[in-house]
Image 1 (cartoon, rainbow, N blue to C red):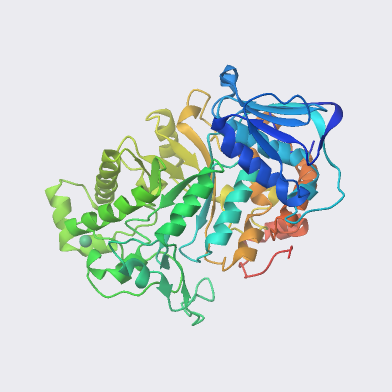
Image 2: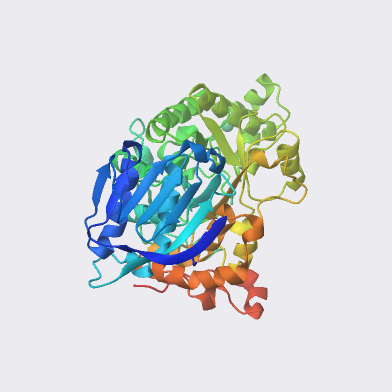
Amino acid sequence: MDIIPFPEKIKLQAGEFRLTPETCILTNTANRWNADYLRGLLGSSTGFLLRIQTGGLVAKNVIRLHLDPGLARLGREGYRLEVRPDVIIIKAPGTAGVFYGIQTLRQLFPVEIEERCPVLGFEWQVPCVLIEDKPRFAWRGFMLDEGRHFQGKETMLLTLDLMALQKMNVLHWHLTEDQGWRIEIKKYPKLTEVGSRRAGTSKTILGKQHDGIPHSGFYNQDEIRKIVAYAAERCIMIVPEIEMPGHSLAALASYPELSCTGRPFEVATHFGIFPDIFCAGKDTVFTFLQEVLDEILELFPSPYIHIGGDEAPKKRWKECPDCQRRIREEGLKNEHSLQVYFTNRIAAYLDSKGRHVMGWNEILQDGLAKGAVVQFWARGRERLLAAIRTEKRAVVMSTYLDTYLDHSHNLMPLSRAYRYEPVPAGVDVNDVNSLLGLEFPLWSEWVPNRARLDYQAYPRLTAMAETGWTLKDKKDFKDFRRRLEKFLGRLSRLGVHYAPLKDAEPPKMKQWFGIFTVPQPQTGTAE
Ligand code: ACM
Ligand code: ZN
């Protein structure tokens, strides 16, 4: 069975089920949306417009989607899939489990099921099996940075479809950066009028010279609503990231009064860490951020709101009379405690609206609000262990050398991506509850388009998806590589420009030199 991510228990049985134009999908009202999704999934390639029946009995040639509270042991996302010659039964304690059962059934079909036009005269058969399955981690995330390069709605919808295929359930959407603000905020129109446009894009990693080709783009609120709804239908939570106090030059170019100096700024055309960040001393900055967040909360129902918090240099805060006054008045130790004050003030605001703040591990300092979720990417291992073991703080793992999809395939070959173990040494089973799961970020400095995005993400993201779902002792790289052959056939049909295996798993010699390779824009394979 070539299923990715590999299921917990699988037993092949004799015989097959054959899908025909007469096959009926039998469901209940709670699963109606799952039935519609399944009909759409099977419809493009087979050309069959399958009948959906809500309630009643159908004895033969039927796919049954059921909720079964008796399967509570499988958890919120687990399912049981049984294929017999006359019936396919997907049962789960919740509708998300039924959805994942559908994703597994999809992979039991030949890869032609992914074609987007009818394949005539094809036998649509699936082998008889019994599968029981549930995920290892609750948080199986992909992060896309659109601040550096705007990709647009079609790419986002395909991204969500591919995540669903791989049973991933969190899209962390990095929407604001030094190089671009990508979401309409009605109260502050300059964020997109000014902040979504830059004059050009850096040509090299170190130099400041840019190509002189303007780059722009943002999502209006209607588009955001549609993308959030599309994600929800695929059991994906979108966690928006509105970065603060650092990586905020696009916002400062739009509203310079939010900075410490009030100087005019330009949306950045090169990459790096910039000294100008939101001022932590002016109350008007918090009013602005809260009003931006009000619109964000209205658009995104996720319990978590990411506020970045990484790479915030303290130079301006050291020189700013407002920031220094804040430090004195609040009895803070220094500028680092001022960032804790900043995070906690936003955390308290989000808390008052029933949401949790989330940030990169730079927010993890003494005094950080208890409910703040930390995404761990670099440094501070001891602090991380203390956060998990002592504070029982919720943590998402994204250690950069193991998970950053912007790294070259030489530096992070497929085998390394596959072998990543998100539970740090020293964390035992009693602590893992606070480790929500893992996430794979794609920073887009050198990702100008879909082809490059696909080339960086695939097939590494597929390997990572298996780590998120499959039990550790069921993982096997050799077997994954075998199953991947068929999976790549699916990706090709879905129009994904994945990195060919010779790039994704380069010879050892190239891997040693990986650290020196400079990412060059290049296109991938398919289409
Ligand atoms: C990060 O990579 N700066 C979170
Ligand atoms: Zn200031």
